[in-house]
Length: 138
Image (cartoon, rainbow, N blue to C red; front, side, top):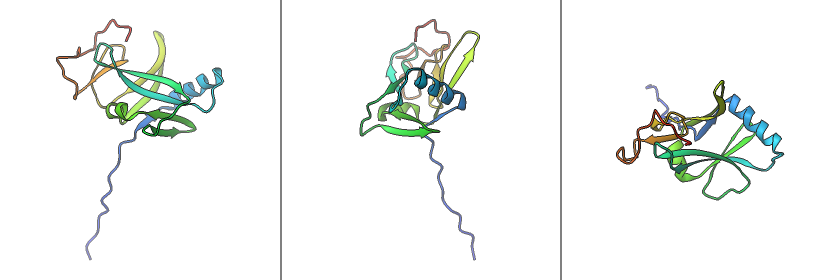
C-alpha cells in the first residue's frame, strides 16, 4: 500500500503583530479611552520611495475590509493595501532616536531611510526614488 501524502498549502498570514507592538496598541487605546475600534493599516501614495504606510484607529468597517484579530486587538486592511502588505509584520521600536511603529514588509524591494516609505517590484523603478538615504518627513 502506497503512502498518501496530504497536499497542504500554507497561506501567508494577512498581517502579524509583535508582542511589543500589541502592548503599545493596547496602551494607546487605553490612554485615548477607545473601545469598539480597530487599528486600520493602509498604504497610500507618497513618500520618497513611492508608497507610504499609515495606521489609524477606526470605528468604521466596510464589507470589503479584511479583518484580523491578534490577541484581542482587531486590525483591518482594505483590499488595495493588502496587495502591497500581505505577510507584513507590525513592530514597535523604541530607541535613543525615538520610538515608533515599524512595518516589516516582505513585499518591499526598497525602503527609504526612515522606513515609512517603500517600493515593491510592481512599482516602476523610474517613477520612484530607490530610497535608503532620505531626509524626509515621510
